[in-house]
Each structure stands twice: as C-alpha cells, then as structure tokens.
Image (cartoon, rainbow, N blue to C red; front, side, top):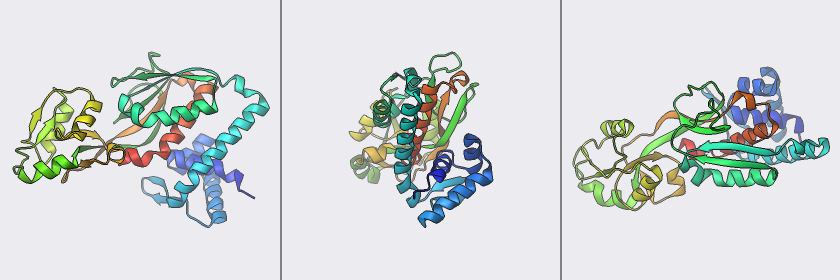
Length: 293
C-alpha cells in the first residue's frame, strides 16, 4: 500500500526547503515531519532529500517522485472538493502580478494547468516590470525576484534567482578572440541610465566594452542577444530555453535575488487564493533548476 500519510510531509519539505518551515506550514512538529519523511524513504529504499547547511534539496529520486506526488495531491484535493461541496468556494477572480519575462516564458503552462483544475477561478494577469503594491490592493498575489521584501505582506521565499551575462554563441566565437584585455571591441546592449547594469559592467571582465543603444525592455535584450547584437544581463533560465545563448566565459552568476510569492494577509484564508498560491508555489518549485541556473 502507498504511504499516503507521508506524502504531505514530503511535499511540504520539498516546497519549503526545511523541516522547521514544513512543520510550521502543516501545524506539526519538527520530529513528526522528519519521521514521516524518513519512513517514506525507508519504504521506497531511496533518499529523497540531500541535507545541507542551507536546507533540504531534492535528490534525483525526490525529483522523480515530486510530479506524481503533486498529481496525487491535486487529485485528492479535487476529490475532497467534490465530496464536501467546496467547489462553490473555489471560484472568483485573482489578480496576479508578474514581470513579463517570467510570465511569457515560464508561467503560461502553470496557469493553463491550474485553470483546468479550477474552471471557476479567473486569473487577471498584470504584467509589469514595476513592483505592484499588494498593500495598496493593486494585486492579490505577486511573483517577485528581489533581494528583500519591504511590504507588510504574507510571503513565501522559494529559491534564489540567478542573473548572469549572456550573449549568442556565434557572437562570442566571432568577437571574443579579437577583444582587448578589458573587453575593448565587445558590445554591451544598454538599458539606459540603470545603475545596476553599470555595476555589472564595472565588475565584469569587460569594463571597457562599448555600451550601445538604450533598450529598457529585458525581453528585447533577450532577442537582441540571440541575434548577436552583444552581451547583456539576463536571468539564467534563458540559456535552457534558448540554447543559442551562452553565459559569457569568465563571468559569474549573481544569486543575491530570490523568487518570492506574495499575497495580502487578508487573503490567506480565502480558499481560491490559498488554492492558487499553493499550486503556484509547487509548480515554481518544480522549475527551480531553471531559476537557479
């Protein structure tokens, strides 16, 4: 028989990255969560998590189990809803804010799958690179990639978001061998007067490369870099989606930012919002390798 009792503990640790946070989320003790995870590992004969100083990380076996565990959880929730008549509460509108890059390239399948599970919940998607205020009720739920959260909101910190310097492989093969010792002869694609970009340039191996153009849209930077216009700063997940891009040799990833899912504290007991946030966090955790880089 499957160890159904241990699956919620496994999912909670996978989502929150620690026994303590998982226990708080489930209203259980630290020891109970550990015992349930260890029991599941013993039953399967496989280690599901790698214990590190920075928390719990899924092993290959854990990553294999995760999609089926999430599917079982969704099926169970759907069954509970039908039996208890709670689908009536799983309806209404949720205003979700996200930056366009994340939404265009990573969110579409998540929202499509959620809509299939909960046909009476409508998503209003607000796309902006500006930070939408949850405190001022400009959005119900927000996905942010930031170093810290300074609003009085309920938040789930999921994982680091890596930022790096990328260019087309063809551009690097052509231009890098001819470049000067500090990048002379190379091009940066400019954002305009953005101090953060200048910091990347100054601390990179190419501080003397020419900054060309003023393009404030990161998605256009992505397409220009793919077309061979030069180097730019992008989230590390672009390389998995666009293999013609390469992290520029000699550069490091910046992992100061983290991906957060935030919501207004008044909404955490609203069923449709709770269902959506749980599903969104679980889906993003499945894709954490893309974000971390």
